[in-house]
Each structure stands twice: as C-alpha cells, then as structure tokens.
Image 1 (spheres, rainbow, N blue to C red):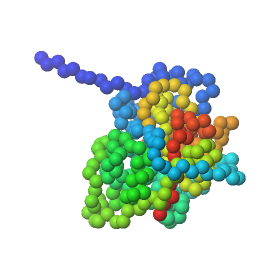
Image 2: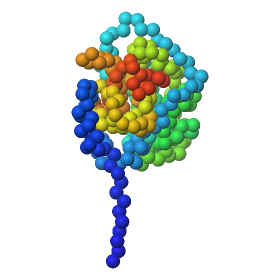
Image 3: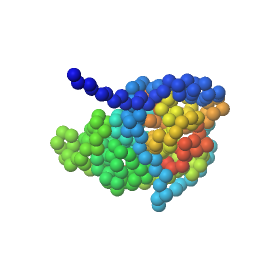
Image 4: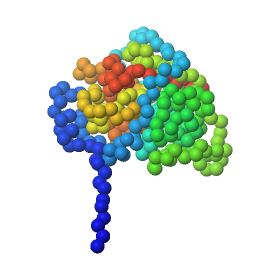
Length: 290
C-alpha cells in the first residue's frame, strides 16, 4: 500500500481580507477577486511583478509647464485608436510591456505611424541583457535600450514569454525566418515626474511610462480610484499613464495595465493623483520617437 503526500499550494486571495476591504469607510475603489487571478497561488502572484526602479541615473529631468490645461484629458478619448491593452501572461515583463507599449502609442500619437503598430516586447525581453527578462527590469534601463538599439515590430518578433515565463534567446531573424528589418528607436526620453502639473502637461504630448510600489490590496482592485489602504509590499510594477481627471472630488490618473482587457476597467485602472501614491509620481518617462 502506497501513501502519496500532496503539497497544496497556498492560494493568494483571502475572503477574510476581501471582506475587510469592503468594510473600509469611504473606499474610492471596488475590491473583489479579479477573474484574471482566480486560483492564483502566492508563488503565481510573485511572478507577475517586476522591480520598481527608483534609479538615480543621469537622466534629463524636465519640468513641463502647465499652461491652460483642461480639467481632464485622456488619450482614451483623444486617440483611442492609438492605444492597445496587452497581457504579459506568466512573465514579469511589465517593464518591457510599459516601455514598448508607450513607444507604440506615441509613434501613432506623434504621427510616425498612420495607425497603431504594435512593437516587439519580446525583442526587448530577449535582447536587453541588463534587465532580467521575466524576472523583472528597470524602467530607466529599458528606455535606454530602446534609444540605443530600438525594437522591431511584434509582427516580426511576436510575444511568446507570457506562455511559460521563459526569457528566450535574442532572435536573429523574424518569426517567419526573414531578416529583421531596421529597428525603430526612441529619439529621446525625459523624466517628467517633476510634480503633478509637469506630468499633466507632458501627457498632452504622449503616453508616459511609470512604475509604482504594489501592496497586496491592489491585487483586489476591480474598479474605481485606487488608494493603498491595507497590506504588505508585493514588489514593483511598471505601467503607462494615459490621462487624468477627477471624480466626486478625487483627482486621478488614467493608467493602462498589462494584464489583459478583462482586468480592472477594461484593462485600465485609476489611481489617486497629486499625492505620489505608492511612489507613482517619482519617476516616469515621456518618449519622443524617431
């Protein structure tokens, strides 16, 4: 007779924590267990996050001047055809998703592409050897890579790491065996996180990559304006700011995530604006494209 011992992985989400969040007075966001992460274990959730860069590098810090800014602004309404929600899958590639995603947005917004072209996150994950592939990255290093090396299109090198969490070798050819064409590069990038109004003004030029510190209550977010209320630090996450606004007296940033369109508010979330919530306004990059 054989006895088989089975180790049960600990589920991440807790109904006790969920009920506690639901009963916090004045909560500006809706807590629930997102379908995207149902049945995720503690280890599964660890694979989602990256490393938040608070890099004190020699970066051009630019304070944009806020002149006659509208009360609200969003590329979701201005040029929705230039935006796309991607899904990083089981790879901690938010750093590449946010950098390449903003690049794809801004080539469309800034008129370099007639329509939105999706550029290759996979190429950056596989070929940027300073960052750590599915193990995380640094939001300064990845824009530096894109300025120096550029990336091809997703049609040439498609996203594969989300299926198994593996980095893969840097490709020398497109998926179809053809030669990789000339890469598309960032012209310049500026750290525009020089105060709330600087970010607001810079947003009128294009979408902006940023990173923030994630606490466990964020993993219960399903809608509304997020403010950290409970839980321990989970890691860092890189995302894309696409706009700003105000609702019922609470100012917010409109933000695109990389967890697919079924998560949050159709793939987006809002976070309180003007208070550097979770270090959200500490370091962020506006890209100008070639």
